[in-house]
Image 1 (cartoon, one colour):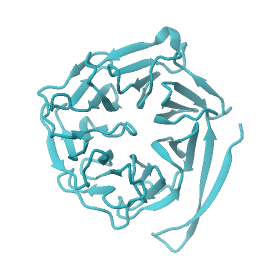
Image 2: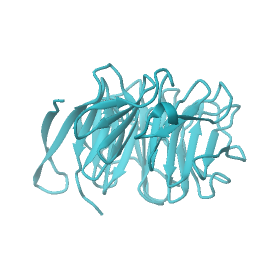
Image 3: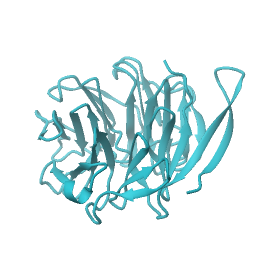
Length: 335
């Protein structure tokens, strides 16, 4: 399948030199679909899309295969890999996680994990580290819906319950409202109240701080990426005002206690922020940006509408519209 290559020249903010940045568009489907879940391993990209399909895209022969049976899910909002298994998250209609072998016959190997038989439950994001998993959902009865597993087989609701404010919720735009890093659980909320949460004891206790987003039903924190226990970034904004650059990104250097805006922020509302090899990337309705100085300044790479991101050793991949993946050669700057 043909790949369209775009070569974009940027001026580095960090030296007077110029460098060439390669961006490729990979086409995994001819349908008018988009994927909010994306992961890569080896020669394969895995996508969970708005048609409820889990698609495996072969980077070598440019061919795609739908792995799950038709009508398994109405929509998939997040996707994660662990060893040879795929975990695909459905947000609504009795929120469940579909798991199956990524190379086998999916018809014989599908397992459904039901978080809770509650039609009000809406899952926003899922994170897996080793065999540890953490899932966050919108509040039900003024309490966040939080679940975890220590073996990816047995799941339980996290207690004691964590109270929420009126109008506070999560956004399932990219599945990146949650993160596990070195056993620490993180998540962010948005809506009428935006907050950052961190737990070092699997959700038994939480450290929290308010995030300085402008809050409404359509705005707040959409994604976080903690580089380490002290440094991280949250992005978001108002998805109804995608070109506004105000209150779309905040930086912490003290583990989420305080947050400050960048000097030059991303170029609009952002649904995902992603960290790899010393560089932060963010994406949203009007494009993709990057920062090589821990989020202080951002440069726009592309104006493609994108939802979420992942990476391998060479590239960053952003899921886009109309069955496309935006592939960006890594900027380097490894620490």
